[in-house]
Image (cartoon, rainbow, N blue to C red; front, side):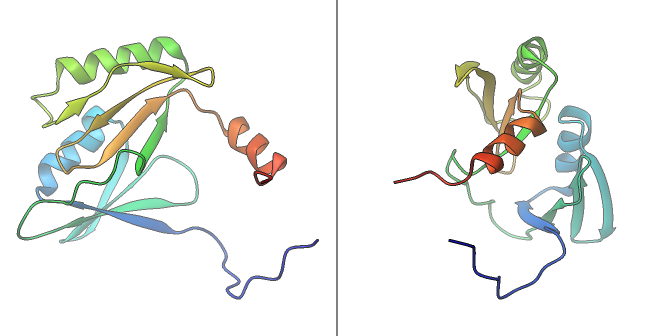
Length: 147
């Protein structure tokens, strides 16, 4: 059965948002630790990206703490291989205090992929692992799970 035409005919996935309480500390973590590219076009927001056609906007909240997302609601950063996962994990443990990282979980292998999770200073979960574009291409080629 062919898919119905969408009601919204969009051009591309533009961006999503996360919260932060300290713009400078967050930028330092995103650039110096995670290696993301950052611009700050507005006083209250900075955009992070790492290639591709979309970005994540980090929005400053004035009062209070950023809401912690469940661990399954996370961003995934891909590295070249298992050695880089191990190196990133060691760096996360060694520099946890320097970047306000709240939690670093152990390296695991699941479905043949090595990765680990960390919770940053703004209560955002990150997964560092080996994931290629080919993985997503194959997943979309395969299609939906059949019940």
